[in-house]
Length: 323
Picture 1 (cartoon, rainbow, N blue to C red):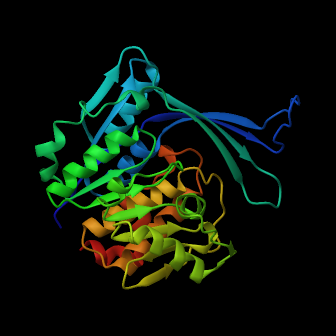
Picture 2 (tube, rainbow, N blue to C red):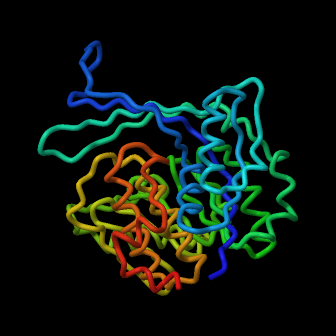
């Protein structure tokens, strides 16, 4: 089976993870349980996940000239990613984040994330101008919102002109210009980001979700030119909506969540790989949900992203899809 070529233009973020049973209030000091560092960032996470699942991945982004940048590049290279188009900013540090994981006995793990973009926001449209012609070499382009919106727009326009599909993960939440939406094959927000983009709340509890709200929110985005809207819904799974169809895919049940931080990136990466390998939509959604289910059982963003053999060992029903 031929490896699909996927281009990721996005962010690198060094995560600093504090685990605590108590989130401090204003002026309060508490003792935490443990502290960890792990490479992350939505762009890099999704690139690593796709490479570990068998895609031929190239990443474009900007790092600082520091040890965090060296470490994040090294992890990408170890995953087999083409890092030759990574850029460096001599004045700004690499992106970093502070992640608070709230672990209370008998309760689900909750995360709170503060991202300092650093060099990620120093990338410019001139830095990606080489893609105007080069983008034709790829089967899919994947974008997120931890880099300047004008860079995403420029890359998406290049892809549109060459008829290359584009996935935009609408995270973290930000307004999206209509000229960008009109270039997208897939737009993937979670339910909160979907509400920010459309004004439509999507209630869900456990595995149940308001299907009418999903349809209404997706319709607003489809009318702006997006071909498919993929809304992730936490414990309720995910919904993919086109002008002709609405498809729900349930989350995997019975999973012991250790760290939900990279679940969305794992889902996006797995879905993009599955679609690029020619999976039908239903199978692609199931594969993405099952891959993300493995991710949340381990600590850290990139360290938790499974390889293809890990997914197939846990869920052998997908083996025939890769033959």
